Length: 112
Length: 116
Image 1 (cartoon, rainbow over the protein chains, first blue to last red):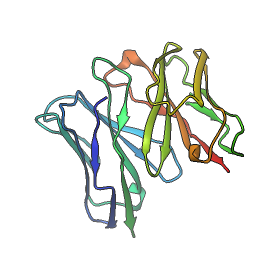
Image 2: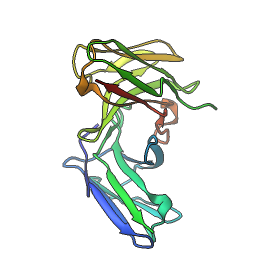
Image 3: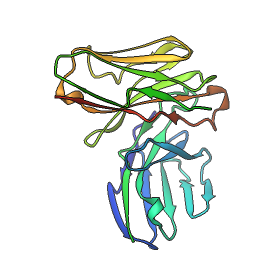
Image 4: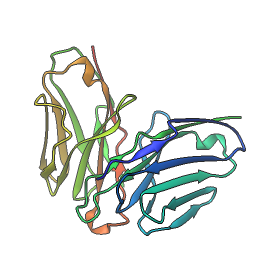
Protein backbone atom coordinates (compact mmCIF):
# COMPACT_ATOMS: atom_id res chain seq x y z
CA UNK A 1 0.00 0.00 0.00
CA UNK A 2 1.03 3.57 -0.56
CA UNK A 3 2.24 5.72 2.32
CA UNK A 4 -0.46 7.84 3.94
CA UNK A 5 0.09 10.75 6.29
CA UNK A 6 -2.46 11.58 8.92
CA UNK A 7 -3.07 14.88 10.70
CA UNK A 8 -3.40 16.05 13.36
CA UNK A 9 -1.53 13.67 15.62
CA UNK A 10 -3.55 14.75 18.65
CA UNK A 11 -6.88 16.53 19.09
CA UNK A 12 -8.44 17.59 22.34
CA UNK A 13 -12.05 18.76 22.23
CA UNK A 14 -14.84 19.59 24.60
CA UNK A 15 -17.81 17.31 24.46
CA UNK A 16 -20.21 18.60 21.85
CA UNK A 17 -17.52 20.10 19.62
CA UNK A 18 -16.82 18.76 16.16
CA UNK A 19 -13.68 16.84 15.20
CA UNK A 20 -11.95 16.17 11.89
CA UNK A 21 -8.93 14.06 10.99
CA UNK A 22 -7.27 14.06 7.59
CA UNK A 23 -5.44 11.42 5.64
CA UNK A 24 -3.18 12.53 2.78
CA UNK A 25 -1.11 10.84 0.13
CA UNK A 26 1.23 12.11 -2.56
CA UNK A 27 -0.02 9.40 -4.91
CA UNK A 28 -3.46 8.27 -5.99
CA UNK A 29 -4.98 5.81 -3.57
CA UNK A 30 -6.99 2.80 -4.66
CA UNK A 31 -9.06 2.89 -1.51
CA UNK A 32 -9.12 4.08 2.09
CA UNK A 33 -10.16 2.16 5.17
CA UNK A 34 -10.85 3.84 8.51
CA UNK A 35 -10.42 2.14 11.87
CA UNK A 36 -11.00 3.17 15.46
CA UNK A 37 -8.95 1.95 18.39
CA UNK A 38 -10.24 2.56 21.89
CA UNK A 39 -7.62 3.04 24.64
CA UNK A 40 -6.19 -0.37 25.49
CA UNK A 41 -8.13 -2.00 22.67
CA UNK A 42 -7.55 -3.15 19.14
CA UNK A 43 -8.35 -1.43 15.82
CA UNK A 44 -11.92 -1.92 14.70
CA UNK A 45 -13.02 -1.37 11.13
CA UNK A 46 -15.32 1.59 10.55
CA UNK A 47 -15.68 1.98 6.80
CA UNK A 48 -14.04 1.70 3.39
CA UNK A 49 -14.10 4.29 0.59
CA UNK A 50 -13.32 3.31 -2.96
CA UNK A 51 -14.84 5.83 -5.38
CA UNK A 52 -13.59 9.31 -6.18
CA UNK A 53 -15.55 11.93 -4.25
CA UNK A 54 -17.33 9.29 -2.21
CA UNK A 55 -19.11 10.40 0.97
CA UNK A 56 -20.46 7.97 3.53
CA UNK A 57 -22.16 8.61 6.85
CA UNK A 58 -22.50 6.57 9.99
CA UNK A 59 -24.69 8.47 12.47
CA UNK A 60 -22.47 11.38 13.60
CA UNK A 61 -19.48 10.25 11.50
CA UNK A 62 -18.95 11.48 7.94
CA UNK A 63 -16.25 9.98 5.73
CA UNK A 64 -15.05 11.55 2.50
CA UNK A 65 -12.72 10.46 -0.26
CA UNK A 66 -11.21 13.26 -2.31
CA UNK A 67 -11.97 13.77 -5.97
CA UNK A 68 -8.37 13.02 -6.87
CA UNK A 69 -8.30 10.05 -4.49
CA UNK A 70 -5.26 11.49 -2.72
CA UNK A 71 -6.92 12.44 0.51
CA UNK A 72 -9.68 11.44 2.86
CA UNK A 73 -11.29 12.83 5.98
CA UNK A 74 -13.31 11.66 8.94
CA UNK A 75 -15.57 14.21 10.58
CA UNK A 76 -17.40 13.66 13.85
CA UNK A 77 -20.27 16.00 14.65
CA UNK A 78 -20.97 16.86 18.30
CA UNK A 79 -18.38 14.59 19.88
CA UNK A 80 -19.26 12.41 22.84
CA UNK A 81 -16.98 10.82 25.43
CA UNK A 82 -17.55 7.49 23.70
CA UNK A 83 -15.69 8.87 20.65
CA UNK A 84 -12.40 8.82 22.57
CA UNK A 85 -9.70 6.77 20.88
CA UNK A 86 -7.26 6.71 18.00
CA UNK A 87 -8.54 6.95 14.46
CA UNK A 88 -6.46 5.36 11.73
CA UNK A 89 -6.69 5.55 7.99
CA UNK A 90 -5.23 2.72 5.99
CA UNK A 91 -4.57 2.02 2.36
CA UNK A 92 -4.75 -1.44 0.92
CA UNK A 93 -3.00 -2.52 -2.22
CA UNK A 94 -5.90 -2.21 -4.69
CA UNK A 95 -5.59 -4.98 -7.22
CA UNK A 96 -2.62 -6.30 -5.27
CA UNK A 97 -4.84 -6.91 -2.31
CA UNK A 98 -3.32 -7.48 1.06
CA UNK A 99 -0.75 -4.96 2.11
CA UNK A 100 -2.79 -2.61 4.28
CA UNK A 101 -0.55 0.13 5.65
CA UNK A 102 -1.75 2.69 8.16
CA UNK A 103 -1.19 6.34 8.86
CA UNK A 104 0.14 7.36 12.27
CA UNK A 105 -3.36 7.88 13.61
CA UNK A 106 -5.09 10.79 15.34
CA UNK A 107 -5.58 10.49 19.08
CA UNK A 108 -8.86 12.08 20.12
CA UNK A 109 -9.61 13.04 23.69
CA UNK A 110 -13.00 14.42 24.65
CA UNK A 111 -13.42 16.46 27.81
CA UNK A 112 -16.88 16.21 29.39
CA UNK B 1 -17.67 -16.33 15.86
CA UNK B 2 -14.88 -16.04 18.41
CA UNK B 3 -12.91 -13.57 16.37
CA UNK B 4 -9.14 -13.55 16.01
CA UNK B 5 -7.56 -15.11 19.08
CA UNK B 6 -4.09 -14.16 20.24
CA UNK B 7 -2.03 -15.53 23.07
CA UNK B 8 -0.61 -14.65 25.44
CA UNK B 9 -2.24 -11.27 26.22
CA UNK B 10 0.84 -10.12 28.10
CA UNK B 11 4.42 -11.33 27.95
CA UNK B 12 7.28 -10.11 30.08
CA UNK B 13 10.68 -11.53 29.34
CA UNK B 14 14.33 -10.78 29.76
CA UNK B 15 16.60 -9.65 27.00
CA UNK B 16 18.04 -12.56 25.09
CA UNK B 17 15.12 -14.88 25.66
CA UNK B 18 13.02 -16.38 22.91
CA UNK B 19 9.45 -15.13 22.60
CA UNK B 20 6.66 -16.83 20.67
CA UNK B 21 3.38 -15.09 19.95
CA UNK B 22 0.41 -17.09 18.73
CA UNK B 23 -2.61 -16.33 16.59
CA UNK B 24 -5.73 -18.19 15.52
CA UNK B 25 -7.48 -16.37 12.65
CA UNK B 26 -11.19 -16.35 12.00
CA UNK B 27 -12.26 -19.60 10.36
CA UNK B 28 -12.52 -19.24 6.60
CA UNK B 29 -10.30 -16.20 6.35
CA UNK B 30 -7.50 -16.62 3.84
CA UNK B 31 -5.29 -13.67 4.78
CA UNK B 32 -3.38 -13.28 8.01
CA UNK B 33 -1.40 -10.22 9.07
CA UNK B 34 1.06 -9.46 11.86
CA UNK B 35 1.34 -5.83 12.99
CA UNK B 36 3.45 -4.16 15.65
CA UNK B 37 2.27 -1.01 17.43
CA UNK B 38 4.42 1.48 19.29
CA UNK B 39 3.93 5.13 20.15
CA UNK B 40 6.89 6.12 18.03
CA UNK B 41 6.19 4.09 14.90
CA UNK B 42 2.45 3.56 15.02
CA UNK B 43 0.98 0.43 13.42
CA UNK B 44 3.61 -1.31 11.33
CA UNK B 45 2.86 -4.24 9.06
CA UNK B 46 5.46 -6.92 9.71
CA UNK B 47 4.35 -9.76 7.44
CA UNK B 48 1.26 -11.19 5.86
CA UNK B 49 0.18 -14.59 4.59
CA UNK B 50 -2.26 -15.73 1.95
CA UNK B 51 -3.48 -19.32 2.17
CA UNK B 52 -0.68 -20.02 4.68
CA UNK B 53 2.03 -18.75 2.33
CA UNK B 54 4.08 -15.68 3.30
CA UNK B 55 3.48 -12.99 0.69
CA UNK B 56 5.41 -10.00 1.97
CA UNK B 57 7.82 -9.98 4.90
CA UNK B 58 9.51 -6.69 4.06
CA UNK B 59 8.31 -5.21 7.32
CA UNK B 60 10.07 -7.77 9.49
CA UNK B 61 12.68 -5.76 11.38
CA UNK B 62 15.57 -8.18 11.18
CA UNK B 63 16.60 -11.79 11.26
CA UNK B 64 15.66 -12.09 14.89
CA UNK B 65 12.03 -12.09 13.79
CA UNK B 66 10.39 -15.04 12.07
CA UNK B 67 6.79 -15.97 11.35
CA UNK B 68 5.14 -19.20 10.32
CA UNK B 69 1.71 -20.37 9.37
CA UNK B 70 1.72 -24.18 9.38
CA UNK B 71 -2.02 -24.39 8.69
CA UNK B 72 -5.05 -22.22 8.07
CA UNK B 73 -5.93 -21.94 11.74
CA UNK B 74 -2.62 -21.10 13.37
CA UNK B 75 0.28 -18.71 13.04
CA UNK B 76 3.27 -17.82 15.19
CA UNK B 77 5.59 -14.85 15.40
CA UNK B 78 8.90 -15.63 17.04
CA UNK B 79 11.58 -13.27 18.29
CA UNK B 80 14.95 -14.82 19.09
CA UNK B 81 16.81 -13.33 20.84
CA UNK B 82 14.52 -10.62 22.17
CA UNK B 83 15.74 -7.07 22.88
CA UNK B 84 14.22 -4.21 24.90
CA UNK B 85 13.44 -2.31 21.69
CA UNK B 86 11.09 -5.14 20.70
CA UNK B 87 8.71 -4.04 23.47
CA UNK B 88 5.41 -3.23 21.78
CA UNK B 89 1.89 -4.48 21.24
CA UNK B 90 1.75 -7.13 18.54
CA UNK B 91 -1.52 -7.55 16.69
CA UNK B 92 -2.65 -10.37 14.49
CA UNK B 93 -5.42 -9.71 11.99
CA UNK B 94 -7.25 -11.77 9.40
CA UNK B 95 -9.48 -11.09 6.42
CA UNK B 96 -11.38 -12.78 3.63
CA UNK B 97 -10.10 -11.85 0.18
CA UNK B 98 -13.20 -12.82 -1.76
CA UNK B 99 -15.17 -10.19 0.10
CA UNK B 100 -12.94 -7.43 -1.34
CA UNK B 101 -13.35 -4.51 -1.56
CA UNK B 102 -15.60 -4.68 1.43
CA UNK B 103 -13.64 -7.15 3.52
CA UNK B 104 -12.02 -5.41 6.44
CA UNK B 105 -9.27 -6.62 8.70
CA UNK B 106 -10.38 -8.23 11.93
CA UNK B 107 -7.85 -7.67 14.66
CA UNK B 108 -7.13 -9.79 17.70
CA UNK B 109 -6.79 -8.25 21.15
CA UNK B 110 -3.03 -8.12 20.79
CA UNK B 111 -0.07 -9.30 22.84
CA UNK B 112 1.68 -6.69 24.95
CA UNK B 113 5.36 -7.64 24.99
CA UNK B 114 7.77 -6.18 27.49
CA UNK B 115 11.45 -7.06 27.22
CA UNK B 116 13.55 -6.02 30.19
